[in-house]
Length: 431
Ligand code: PMP
Image 1 (cartoon, rainbow, N blue to C red):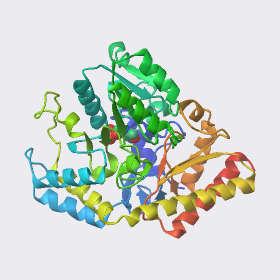
Image 2: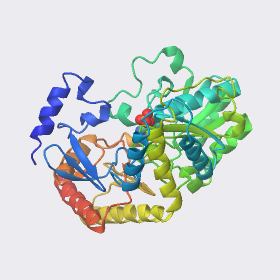
Image 3: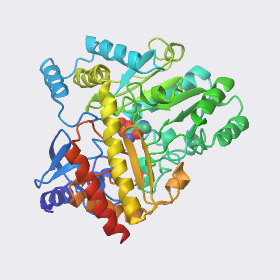
Image 4: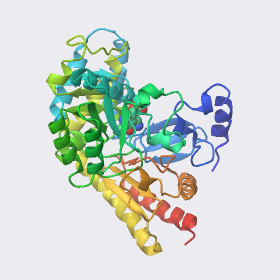
């Protein structure tokens, strides 16, 4: 495979951009080799600077659920740009997307738009703190909530991949207000709450974590957290930046039937444009300025181009609920193909899947939390990743990321993914 142009662009980029990239995992550091520079993408495929074509299994880390350059989204963006890329003043589209989010996401009665998932989570905990008058939050090891200081404590995703789950630069003062718990360990959370009685403002979690690979909540875990938060006056925040509009039109909360007090959103909500949002019960969101005293603002928040893209993709998902059936069946076919390979090769590897999120873990142990995810053979994953790339399959360049299946994969694409996986596993696992 020819990748000269990507290599040359990366070596130039390293002279001007830290590590040559604008977000760490993109540098392929965890998997070895140089990152691919992309030129265009359409539907299920991405095309790099050297002319190679890939089936995209990460879809811009989630947003491109309908594939790249979706016609309706593209047209909405172009139309909005022609009306001016930014007003910095209210516009109807902000109302339309807010109405739709409140309709789609069960916990959301009021919603504020921001520009990224990071802003959404940072703002949500500030509101929870303002509302409860308490300082501490509980986060789960291996969950990632963006790069806000309070969350870079045993963080998943790139922080985990780069070996910096606790980032330098986060002050001890900030870190002490973030208490840690293990995902799926309800008794452990209860203990942390008991040890910090009446001091915890919020429990924040990805209801279905994707940032230590795809991890499933065990029966009763989310329900138990809901009950605990009710009993203790703690704000339960579901970070649905990944799972929102993906696991169902109302996200993981709709699919799993546990309704948080607040929800953070990102990725799909912007249709590929930089958008995040946080919302929840009216009583809590009424604390947000100018309605209430908790300050949060943004020059480009509710940007018309971003709102046009987001509103169009959410509308599409709302009007086409059959998309979720297609996403699920695409993913199940891929996972069934992987399982057949594992059976034939006599390999004991773990696959976690829900809806259109899945991970193949390079371990024979079950992966249910941060500790079990860390048992994976990341060196073997790195080899596998690079071989898959040579077979034209673009995976997330880290073991600790879920994959995101799009609705536009054809049966032929799915067969190509399954065959590539078979060949690459044979090579890496030497069977
Ligand atoms: N929360 C979750 C669950 C995420 O997966 C991410 C990003 N992957 C974020 C928050 C942060 O979002 P952003 O990168 O848009 O700041």
